[in-house]
Image 1 (tube, rainbow, N blue to C red):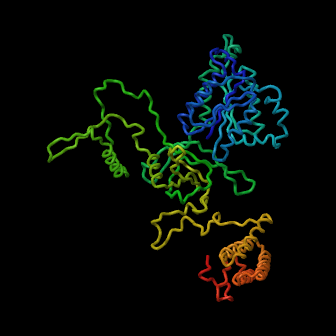
Image 2: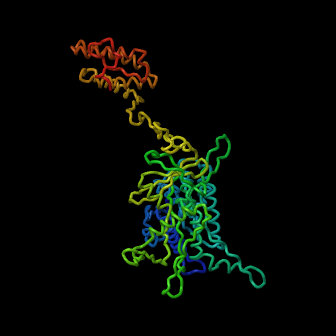
Length: 586
């Protein structure tokens, strides 16, 4: 989910915030960007960010990077220049983010501004009232169509008692509505007017309320932005019937609703969401899955519970409390499995330093010293770690049911920096979405095959269409070149006999596939003329015999089958032209 951060660097951003002389709108915007970077560092470390500042021109400060420290340093060096031009920035952002185009990328544009409208012909009001109406389909506004695929988020810095700010809010909302852009305005909540002793409100105290816009309010706007656009999708991942193989995981970027077209014409599409519990159905080799078309890709991250800093116990540190022993319920149907798991965990959790031997050599007793230190998140068992290690080692993928008749697959993905993570590819809804595999609901185990039965999975083609040499006759020169190639080989027979018949059969099959039967008769006439010409020039008798044989075979109706092959004439058998000789088969 690439994000482009745009910072308004107009002179109006240098105004001090009313009631807070220690802050300007620009300084609050910088603090907001820093807080956004802190949130993304904790939630989406793998995402690319870029920074630009805009006035009448747009300047890209930091190109897309995962090094957030570059952006932290760059925002401190932004200096206001002149008036703001939002439309120029939006048009430039389309070209900057063009490399991230595609249905699998959710593009985010976050704008920090005081909602300035601009001046003159470059203002937003002039664009909405004069330039844009009735011109939506013109080529000069094609960039708006691309921008409609982005998520626009405006962090609006201002006071509701300021008419300059409130008018800017309404115009910004008109821009989103009239241009059909997906966006949202994040603005401070208006403060309630304070009542005086006589029961009337005091508008003066409300216009410069100290708490209406400050660092805390900006941080709240960023939290609302992250909650709306950067919150990971939490689901339950289940693997098999063992009750322990089920754990909450996070999907990043968050999943989006899918609009499934209705099979009935004129009906609205069906909105589908991924289920809260996704279940692994089986495992397939990555070579069998290949690279099918997918709707989206998501990182599969384990959900880690953050430990609070105040969890330390107070009191004397001399006595250490033992960990409570796990009590097993004998009436539990999973009692045997839990007991076996507890024994295995105790065996592998023993530390040689925590054991001591007692007794003589004949009777050695191992005394285990219990440690009072609680397990950290890194020491606890994790389904994602187990699944990632198994899939990476076996080079396989896990087929996952994400909804009703809706599948995806999880595999270990390694990026350019050799960092490996679990990746979920969501397939289009349906059971027959990977043609070479077939219906996903009919897959089974290799052990279920009957004795002597071979697996017909995956479906393999006898000939790969993209590996065969194709014949293209869009232009006359291409056809003429292929015919001349056959005639060149004809003049060099018998040395080029096999090449002659190979090219002849290639042209014949292409002509039959296109229904160009007249080409076969024309080619036979050319071969006869070439045979007469070579006979006059004293060519070898074998060359003339092969040309006469090829012309005769081209006119036979039995060779109108695209699967048949014309073979060379064998020596000593002039009447057996169609018999395949062992020395001429290819």
